[in-house]
Length: 584
Ligand code: ARG
Image (cartoon, rainbow, N blue to C red; front, side, top):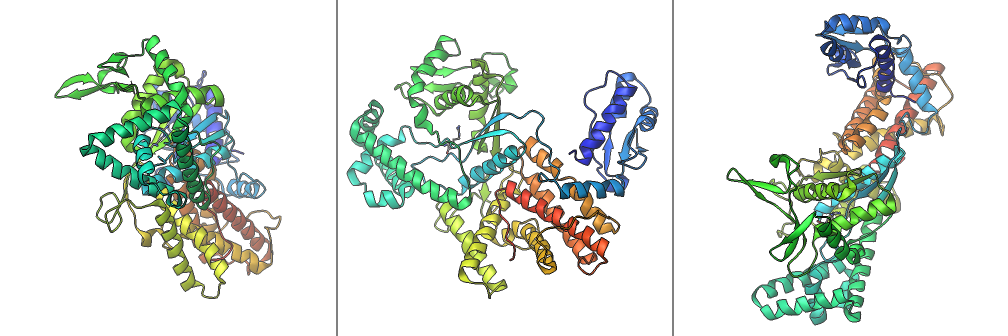
């Protein structure tokens, strides 16, 4: 099933093919910037006129003549220098809404070319408490996984946890000295992080401790039984603790292949890169340098300093023989290519790692993985009321666990006030759906590249672009059905007559475009915005148009309209990892 935009695009393509063969690159239909002028517009006459050195308004008139579009839109209008504006016919809108009433996909087309896509997200370091920054990667990555999956791609969700590296020398040393098995079990991240920080501080002033930590690391890397066993315990308890949070958030991974998984492959990866001339020795270390193929300004292996470019190499082996974050990432690219046949890899990682990924992607291209689409989907920082990275009152990182708990607590208080009659179990269940939904939505509704100020009151508000607002529109529709004693909508034709009916019906048909846009740009906030608009139009319709008291044909049509709206809201929220409730 085409969205109206796709339908118009297909019709325009036919006309263009007839008028100017061979057809120019895909005709482009987009929403009208000003809805007073129409629903959609195309600039294809302008593009074609430039090519043919013709008058664009004349070409637009010819195109309008050649278009077979009667069943979809009114006669297109020529506007400005040569745009064609389209206004969808109410009869087409009504028909299309009715079709979505019978469609499980609610008019969202399946990808023409499904791809194998690895999504690398969440990916915390296990010896550090999960904090608020991990919320963004986890929630964004989960939404992108759901969206691409729904579009028919084969999604491989991979949690690339940081479970290896030099830090473990310090942790092993510290744990042997003062580790507490009980604490490790109950709060692995907190305990390991505390140990790590303490030893790190001590090692700065005490060379003996520094040396001892290094020895522990070497022992671990050589496979020493005791150290290996301890490390496995660190890993196990950390993974258990992670699972608790993921379950609460409703996030699932297909794989958790952490850095340690690639450890054995690293020497060989470095050897191959050296042998192929991609990497070379430099001051005892091994690094990848610029190959000079990119303009210096775009070359991630060069940085400009006082007007001059100097090398900005990517280290893949340290002078002490240890390997780097980048080495593991290179081994990971190879693995994802060979084992998952990944055509695309999406890394949902903090914006502060942009340079790392630019270098990594260029190194991978030179290594021969140029056919894989590698995307760094980066995000900004969550800020506190002072517009600085959010901190606890004591000045520490805001722990993800605490944030999730607070979301539920706050939602519970609000629900208790609104619905004192609910049982405790019901109230807690609602609090989870509303609280966690609000927390996730607040993050997803932001343009991910921007920093945003975190605000509990705003994100839990029942009006505005929030999860509770969208969930509430769903609840309202379900209430109508309950009142009517109906499970689902009746078989009925759709009549769109009132302005609010037309506006709502019209919006429903754009669901597919909004999901596609969120996928194409890796920006779920487009989907949030769509759901917010849809909920708003529903509320307007609800104020203006009685449903159950209308005469039979109108009533049934409005029930269909309500049903398609409810299912679209539910499906849209589901793609964001957010649930709905039947009452709230
Ligand atoms: N563990 C890293 C961190 O916490 C993120 C890893 C992202 N994924 C990757 N393949 N580099 O910063």
